[in-house]
Image (cartoon, rainbow, N blue to C red):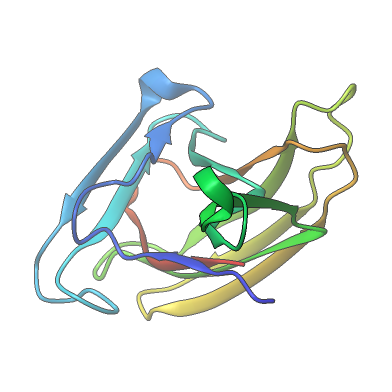
Length: 169
């Protein structure tokens, strides 16, 4: 069974927020005709090294449906099934805003609510003005239910960093 969730910021920021050094980070949706897909993308900027933007998500998939024999009088009744993801992969299209400098950043995927915060692989990268696909993954080690965080730490200050088409699966 495959599960995937995609956001391209067409209908809002979908839970994305400034997190680390949040007072120094700004983010906004931009619709200037240069989105990777659709018409909008997320533009981020920090005035402090390692300011970040992040979104949290569940790593448990819950499906609901109708089963046989569980309802009143032996008829169809509701069923629910929850599955814990063993791993999480993140793909995103990122770039430095056209006309600005190259952007240095780090993508970290955090496994939240563990006894210690030792499961958070990092992937550093540098991007220019062309949309570039980056991919990163994490093996989930904790007990269910879990949450994870996708976080971009910005290593270039006072420059715009663009994010679009994030897929998680």
